[in-house]
Image 1 (cartoon, rainbow, N blue to C red):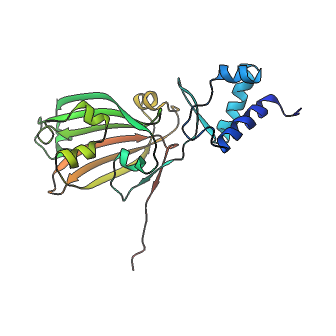
Image 2 (cartoon, one colour):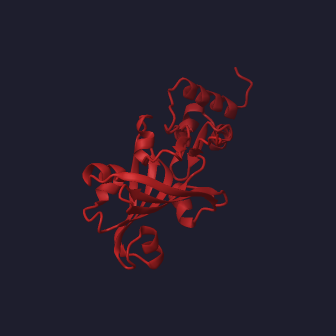
Image 3 (tube, rainbow, N blue to C red):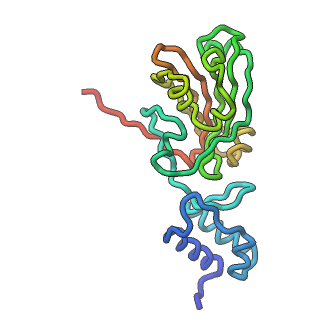
Length: 238
């Protein structure tokens, strides 16, 4: 009979399931009520065990969803221009996008300047939340000239925007100019990504250019810094 407190025994049991890959990164843990029944303990004891594993960085809780085995951070290589799905392709991880806004609007002067179009030209305005498995990790707001993408659809934005541009539109993407800053999350970001309101997030503002120099998008992305790591390679001038 173990002399460890029950919450530590529960944590040990879950830790072993994760070590043996019975529970894999991104998998949901059993619900609190299931763990209560399995170990014959109170909900307080179960929550102590989950709190311990959270503090150890082994699991994480998503408000309104439950507890999950923590995923390895997505590596965001700043020097490699790839889309969300491309970054995850070699990891065999389920991902999807939930489109929140899909509309055509008139470009205000500031936006027209960013997209290098005439003021009040029409543009697509899209907001979507990007998910790894069932976890929201990125809130994206993007604007794209309607003149370039008259056949853009909701379904395209549920999947890969870059695949649509390159494979369906036969356009050549050349580069992206990006600015990365730590910011406090907006109420919208807190709700969309289940963030702690007082914890800074990373915001990436970018403009995408086609090979002919035309701007094809202006975007703002908010990342949960717990889910991403940003890398770059700096070479000393010879």
